[in-house]
Length: 315
Image (cartoon, rainbow, N blue to C red; front, top):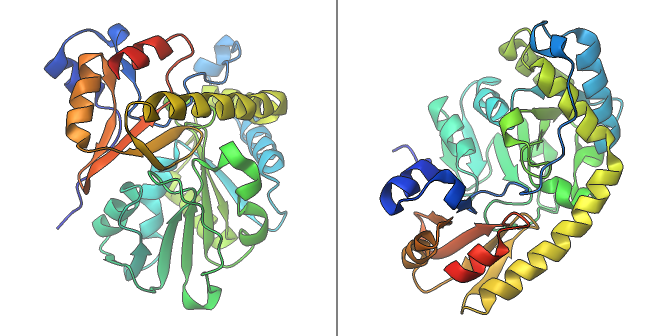
């Protein structure tokens, strides 16, 4: 049976049920930075010309510098991490893949769709979400034994909040390893559709063939390069997120919730009845995330700087 591919978002359905317009709502069901990287002004020809290889190389060089990618590891820019997640199961003949059940469910759906068997035991392929979504749990790597598998996928879409925890430097030169990165979470540019695969040269080469020519748009190449080169913005954003997430915890826990996990972009709280909490927040035009596998888990992202009062009132 295919897993339920529930996600954050879905604000249109919430509006249809509870009323209002998009401007009335704050969507806290995702883990996207509410204060995104400021998009620079782009030249007109970026929208009309095919992306050139010079722009691709410049973006990939910025990505290598930001994540300190080893010279022996390959790096590929793609139209969002989701496109990479969909393609990875097709790199090898279908077999058994180890995936945690309470994690980002697109990995399981992609492998099932490619004919793989999902297991919680050791298998020839393994997927790790680091930090995990929605629990925020970090993966140390201590339980990994390279000789036991031919493919190891590490989804680090939320890892740039705490860059020191990345496994890029120590693992991406090992055979069969692919680490995924995204500009949609920490940089808040989900609509840019820009992600990266870093790791085994043979695996990355196969992914590149699947994507075809010009996979990343000209605007994404330019904006992505600017974002990855702006270390001052990244450092100040990490500091701001630490302050904001502490405010979130203080605000929400005062209402009787228990913090059980999360990152600096989203928090996971245990409540008495998550659906009732979601309904209560929705009456205040705040959309939250609940999970089909646990009726007590409520996940909240951070509100924009000028909408904290709306969250407090909804609570």
